Image (cartoon, rainbow, N blue to C red; front, top):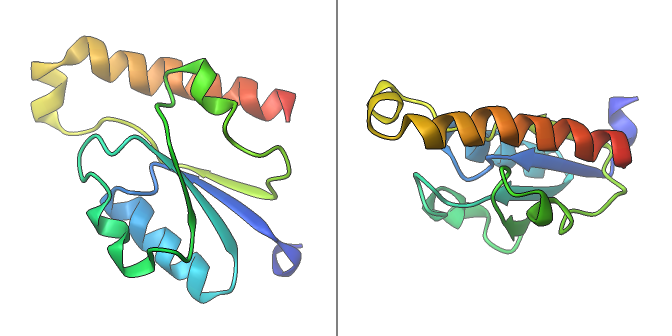
Length: 113
């Protein structure tokens, strides 16, 4: 039941969409963990909620970084990705690494949690 949630993980929580979701979850009283590497926005989108959420700096494409995340998560919003046409042309290998390998690492983390 959604009302009973304690811990919410938001991958890509420092981005535009993720940070707005984080702010709403905090308003609802949820304990929020943000997993992000700050690729695009750094972490300035979270200045408003500094100290109200737990920030884990990590790269979803790196399996080792997933070990930083607690196992007792109740709900996950997986928003971490590199998007935008500019990046598709400028750094296509990095886009694939993050978007495909990162999501595969996420699924593996879910399976092992």
